[in-house]
Image: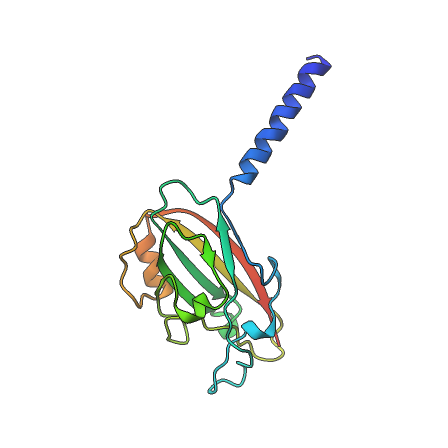
Length: 182
């Protein structure tokens, strides 16, 4: 193969890789970078838990390039290190409209734009991080799932119940990790 052909093949591969990378389903936040520490204001605030010392603000989120034929989204926020390794689910949100491209700050706390499922603390909205002091920075995994289901699931599903309903109906998923510790 001559030099011109090698350059042409290289250019085609480069632009093809850029085109596919730009079409990835992605989730981002303007309030924290992926795998970065979240500010204390996003931590939970519960009078019955001394580890919940924040303002319970929910972060803003935005997503791009959803799969074709997306009928709804589901969003789960889970801390795998919580409850000493058993995990704590901080948000179960679903029936998110296919036209949606994100949540403004506090939408998840205020129940805007989704149907709430039951999180580990037992409520249907955002419950910010409350790790115990000395346990290190926990990883809060935000997982956004594009589904082929119309937004008709009932309120109050747990994470496990939601996943059972989504089985066979997921199109793609994307994630983002925020860390928080005290």
